[in-house]
Each structure stands twice: as structure tokens, then as C-alpha cells.
Image 1 (spheres, rainbow, N blue to C red):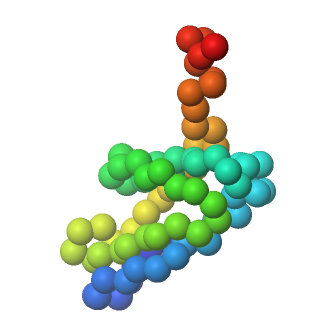
Image 2: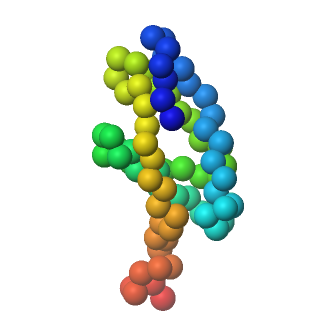
Length: 76
């Protein structure tokens, strides 16, 4: 996504999480390939802000599976 307008724009980004088989009750990570920042997202709608003076665009890599406590060996 990119903002070509000279003013800041923000809103909800609609993402088809179901197409990547991401369960509705599990979070996932959106990694910005331009800045290296990582965002924790949940569900199909997430907040995005594009400021032309700071960050006019995002190229996001979605990491489908985030570990939860039961995924680790020490969990009983």
C-alpha cells in the first residue's frame, strides 16, 4: 500500500486472513519489508497510517503462525 497524496491518510486495511488459513482467534505478524518494523495483527481489519513525511508506503510480509504458550516444550 502507498500514499501518493501529500497529506497523511489512515484507515482500516482489509486482509483476507482466511485465504492464508489464519484462524480468527490467533494473531499474526505483518512485517514491513521497507523499515523492518513488525506489527501484531488480529482478524481481517487492521489500522494503517501512511504519512508521506515519515512512511508513505508499506510492503508487508505476513507471518501466519505466531507461537503461543502451548507451543513450547515446557508447557505441561
